[in-house]
Amino acid sequence: MSHNEKLELMVSLVLIGGVVLSLGVLVLALAGYSLRFGQEIIMDDEYRVAAENFFAYVFSLQRYSFTATGLLAAGVVILMLTPYVRVLTSLVYFASEKDLKYVLITAFVLAVLTVSLLTH
Amino acid sequence: MVGLAEVIAASFLAGFIGSITGLGGASITTPLLTLMGVPIKNAIAAGIISIIATSSGAASSYVRGGMSNLRAAMFLEMFTIVGAILGATITLFVMPRLLYFLFAGFLLTSFIGLRRHLGDELPSEVIQDRAARWLGLTGSYYDEKLGRMVSYKLTRPLAAGGGMFVAGIASGMLGIGAGAFKVAVHELILKMPSKVSSTTSTFIIGMTALAGASVYFNSGLLYLTLAAPMAVGTTLGAMAGSRILGRLSNKTTRIIFLVVVAFFIVQMLVRGVLE
Image 1 (cartoon, rainbow over the protein chains, first blue to last red):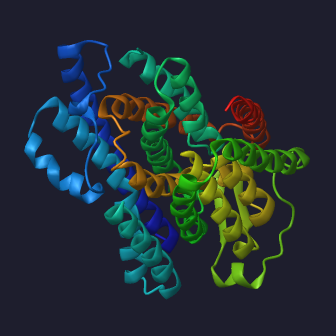
Image 2 (image 1 turned 90 degrees about the vertical axis):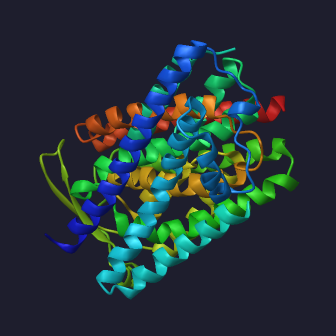
């Protein structure tokens, strides 16, 4: 397996894993939601995303446990985490290959992303 | 008010077109949902989440077999996420009307540039500059339509980085992936083959959108009940679209792209005038 193929495989597994997981959770959540409310899209505080920042929201999810709202939130969070984990995976790969140029490039992207998710 | 099924259907269409053209699809869902009665700011906030869905859903199949150029993508992401965060911040101080015209202008330049190259199936012999060699920006993929492996070289990554920075600003300002502008930068500056260009753009827009989405998290504009059906619809649409891309010719991909972009230019100008 060439170097690029290994990276491609890792990145593609992260992406497909994140997408399938979030899709599964969201379909389940929407099924539960529509059993209760039918087709209507309710936009009230129960379903509004409100948190200091992304990571604070992720940690606040525990309070929901297995309600439809909790599953909806978990699905959206998993989806948002997918590209984040993808950068993290690439960084680990380049570090293991001792490819300094790309370690610096991916570390920069990860740092900017983390700061942005933490401060907004 | 609009129902779940309509939102899923509209998002499926956006994900399908988005994955083929390298666009995020939010420029399709935002006007569609607005027409269906969703307030525009909520449509934009949920649209950003669906861009991440398009990107991850389609890219998961593109990265295998080298259809997307990962190294080029990661290099370009440095510029686009900084632009996206800056753009989202600038938006607070700029008149919306100016944004629409600015954006139509961006799209127009990419439209003119790409139209000129419509006849070429693949870029002709490319001579790499020093930065491109240093970054190791080459690649190859199996082209189903041509029935052979295509090897290519990229050039001028620093100029492309500048372009990506601008694309990031547009993306942060308008809450879209700015895939149209990214595709143009890939093809006109880096000299990427069309399919590599749209699939690499698909890969990058997820990252740009995530940087932009961070800004929407404490805005109170994001509703799970809107984001969830959009994410489901776009993911399925993107997966379906990514299955057929390999079988299309580069020329067909580019024509679909140009038609969609022409539609956006008109849409942006109309919005700018009405604002």
